[in-house]
View 1 (cartoon, rainbow, N blue to C red):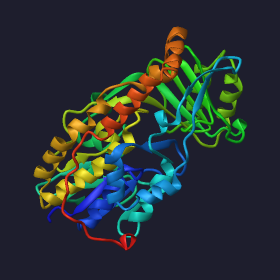
View 2 (view 1 turned 90 degrees about the vertical axis):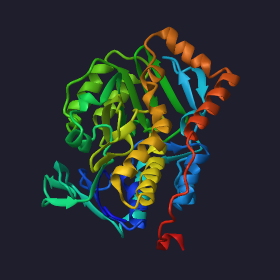
View 3 (view 1 turned 135 degrees about the vertical axis):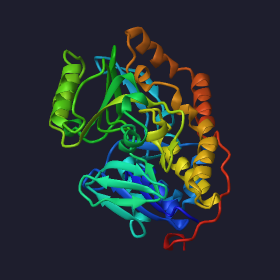
Length: 391
């Protein structure tokens, strides 16, 4: 196999999942991550359907993912007086298995750290392709040359920007923002509740975080790394709210763990440019769309498998990766979680709530979700080498 030195940007889910397979196929893998350490916690992510389970099983981590799962729970929609209006069942948002993103990232790190190089606290600053590789420069580290580069660094992908062009050419803002906060004032986890006013939502004790916010907005101008600025934007968006909105937002302002981002969708015609290829949210992300983690893990399996099947010929492998995966990833090209989580009018809020009282409709929606999650025929790629975890 040729082209065996691979640089992966991003150490969340897609990057380490790909590293797991590439190392077993004989590649020397370096993973660079802007964060100074592996990120703990984060929102819950889920797996659903036989395709997701099959890939986790082939990775040898299905049992461990099940052991670390959070245990999802129903969410009750309430009015401004706290009175129940409807119940969103756990399987609607939690899939078959739900696990904290940080726990899944830690599990994948455990399976790869001894055999792959992780570089934390650094980021790629330029990529220059030559006839035989890609020359990469970094914010901190010395320049290096790799055979291939993979952008597995999320919707705001740095690699995509460097290799394909500006983010605004590939990422479509969908008119909403969301925020996650570790709110001590929420107290111990009890019943998950969600309260809506037109164009905004707050949830406590849900599967995303102890406090979860979604609100409609024009595009906001802010620094993605300035948490204090983001907290002020959240407070402005929730002024005059009823129920417990004021105290929850105030508590979020003091939260040690806080994250705010847009609800956006990545729209790309191709995933590869020369020796650079995109994986996961960088290529086909849709914020809060419910399929991101499954797409990342299955995509890593397909991309690594196609490289192995092509003997490392990146031109052949990247083309086959796109051919195999584009139909499966099209579910991420549709939908917008914003109007569902934060309906624009009171009538739409009521309509959304009523949907969960119709069992046949709900059952049909769950069936369709599993169908989309399994809409790919997994190939049996060359058998990779075993590791101590397989014994």
